[in-house]
Image (cartoon, rainbow, N blue to C red; front, side, top):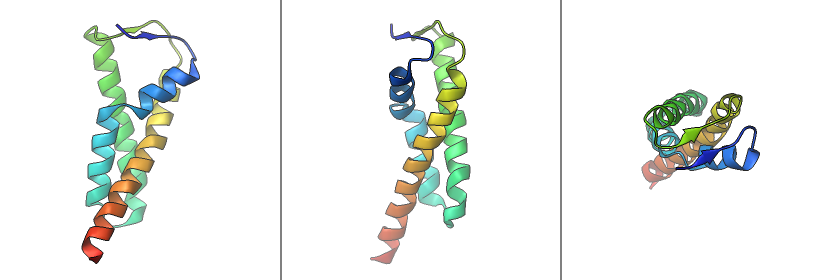
Length: 99
């Protein structure tokens, strides 16, 4: 069981950075984006999916959530990491077609 403390910035950053749902959704949507302007949309979608996976994990007892208030930070950090993953996917798709 992973304990989650209130407003612990290290835990929130690690949860957002290591969320496989954020990584997968952002990278795949970024890879399929045909314009760079679609990357924030991909990042927002990835952050929402990542937060839903986080919430479901807490509801099904995969980890205990004892704090209230870190959810907004988790969504914002998920967006930031999602934007980075979407940009990486976009960059990979552009370099693949250029060759």
